Image (cartoon, rainbow, N blue to C red; front, side, top):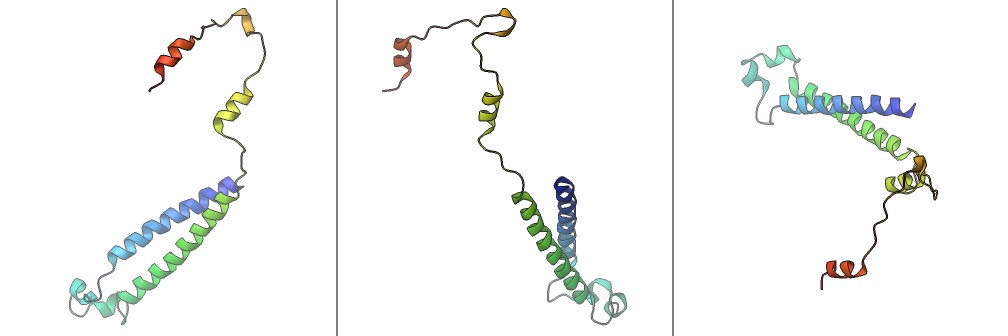
Length: 124
């Protein structure tokens, strides 16, 4: 259940992020108005009498709120995953059988450890 929820929220989160980027790139600065893009009187006919600034800024605000909620949801879902103790290496060592005999009758070669060769490897 949590894997499914995480995937859905992550997908919505990414789509909202891309939509915010698109809306911000479509907006003009405060000095520019829609008249420059669509002709002298077209701003009133395209997005209404208030122009596109109100529509785009409201849409950006709504998407920013959705982005905030999905961020919190992703953080909550990620923090409630079951925690494992130890590291990956400890789990692999514990999962190997500990026995004195080697299976299939094959003996591992014994390599003698020379104390003098270890002493040469230590930097002074």
